[in-house]
Length: 276
Length: 290
Image (cartoon, rainbow over all chains, first blue to last red; front, side, top):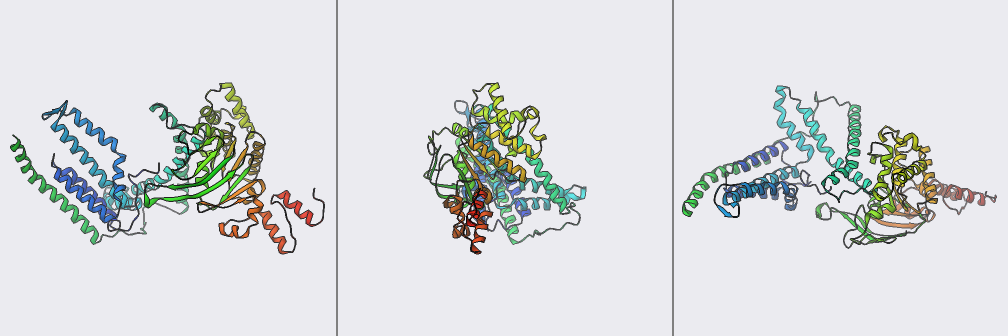
C-alpha cells in the first residue's frame, strides 16, 4: 500500500515547487491540451512534449524514477488500449497476421498520448502539496461564485478528501495486518474469492471513516468553523516571475506543436509520396 | 516455542533512497517459552516494526538478520505463515477496530475458520463459546447481536475473543490496555494471567505503562532508535539510572518509592512488583512479611 506513487507529493525546494499552484494547474491543463493537439502519427510533437516533461522534472528536482513510477500504476490500461488498437484496427495494409500498419501506428500513438498525460499529471501532484492543490483549484474556480456555486465548500471537501488519503492508507494497512494475523488470506484463490476476502477489511474501514468524519466535524465545530464567510487565508497565493516563465514555456510548447503539425504534415506526405 | 532473533534490520521504503527510513538497526533478542516479555521504548523506537516481524506481517528483508520461532525459520521463503500465525496471536491497539462480521459469533469464529477449516460447526461453536466465556461474555446472550451495537468494553472483549479463539501459543499485544477504564484494564490483565496459565505459553507486551511491565513481566527489552539498549528483568532495567535517562522512560511507582526511601537512608532490595515491594519494606522494618 505504501507504494502508491500516483498522486503523491515529493517535498523539495525547487523552482517548480515554489510556483503558484493556480499557475501550475493551468500549465498542466495547457500541457495536456498540447498533447492532444499533436495530430495523428506526428511523433515529433510527442518528442517535444517529452522534452517539456524532462526539463520540468529537472527544474523540479524530482527523481525521474518517481515520475516514471506513476506510469506503472496505469500500465494495464495502456497495454489494454494498445492491444485493442493492434488487433481491431482494420485500416491500412496488413503487415503480418491481422496487424495493420495503421493499427501499429495507432497503438504507438495512444501509448504515447496516455503516458505523456500521466507523466504531466504526476509531475503536478509531485511538486504541489495536496493543500496547495486544493487552494489552487479554489482560486481558479472563484469566478463561479457569480453563479452561486459553493466554491469554498467544494475546495474544503476536496482538501479534506486529499488530506485523508494517507490516513486511510495507513488505516487500511493496519486493518489488513490485523485480519492477516487472524489468518485472512488475500493472496490466493480466484478473483471472486479474493474480492470476498476484502470484506473484513472494507467494513472496518468504512466504519472508521464514519467515525473520523464525526470527529472531524466536532473538531471543526469546536473551533467555530462557519463556512466561507469572512474567512481569510493563512497563505496568500501570489503570482511571481516563475509563473510567467512557466506559462511562456508551455505557450512555447503549444506553438511548437502547432508548427510541427503543419511542417510535419508536409514532410509526412512527402514520405508517403516517396514510398508510393 | 522459543523465539530467537539475530541482528534483525529493517528499512521502510528501501527502494526509494530519498524516502528510506531505517526502523530497525540490528536487534538481537532471545525470548524463552513461558516468559511474559515486555517491550518498552519511546514512540518511533522500532517496537511495532519488531513485533510485526514475529508473525510474518513484515517479512524479513534480504541480508537483514534472522528470526527463528520454534520450528519456523522466518528467513526461509517456504515458511508457512498461515500455520505460524495460528500459533502466534497478535492483538493491535484498539482491536475493536477490526470487527467486521454481522454477528458476534461470526466475528469470533473468523480466525478459527481461517486457521482450522476442517473443524465441524459444533466444534467451532464450542470454541467460540469458550473464548467468549474467557473474556467474560455470555455466548447465548450475545452471539447473534451485531458487534457494532455493543458498548466499547464489550467490543474490546469480542475482539480479544476473536484472537484467543485460535488458542495461540504465543500472544503478542501492542498497547493492550489503551483506552480501557481502570476496571476494564484490571480485568483484562487478569484474563492475560489466566490465559498464561492455560494454553498461552509466552506473552509479549508492548507498553508505555511501566507499572504494568514491573508487575507482570518476567523480562523486558528497552528499545531506542531501532536498537535494544538493554534486556533483563524489570528490576535490572529500572535500577539502571543511566539507562532510564538515555532511553527517556519513566520508572514504575515501586522503583520510584525504592529510590525515595534510599534518599531517606532506607535501603530496600526487592522485586518491583507491588507484593515484592511490600515484602522488601517489611524486611527493612524487620517485620515478618506475609
